[in-house]
Image (cartoon, rainbow, N blue to C red; front, side):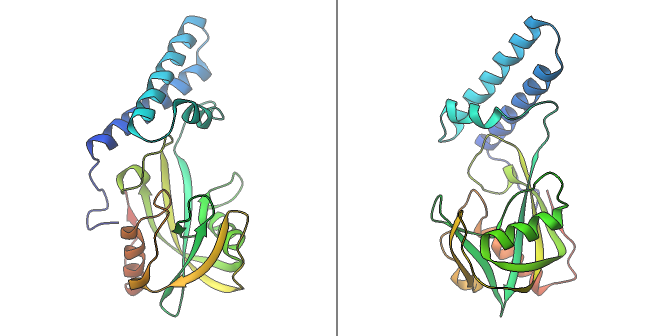
Length: 215
């Protein structure tokens, strides 16, 4: 999060966004088209989008294609929720087994969960702490905030969460749980969170009257 929350896209970022939009249009077309020739053209368009995404990042065509496979019907951005929980002016982070980087606990929101329920569940599952979401701090377009590229378009929701109980307990996705001071943030899992975002969350803690950031 920067002073301009609508951070400008890089050239690669614009290519990724264009490919994401093309893939979404193609996926939607495949869902609603009736003519077999139209369906074939939409499949070709999606293949072009996947190729662009593969050339723009470090994932193979096959890997990206598998990520798109579950998408059906009208395609919309996915929703990622992240919880900022503090104790003694330190922020709660968990270490991801997948890449060894630290992150705010969180993940994709499940169908049936409200946003606050989703972030509270993710914090409990990944860290062992029971929390209550008390304020929405930011709604960000993942493409615009320095994360490594990914095929799917996503919005990131950051919540301030109050710790109610529980104790540190890693999960199948995390192998360590700890609190960190603002000047001691460890290496991060940048697909999930950035240093700029962590810094902005500390600023929000110091300024509880601030409105939520967006875009």
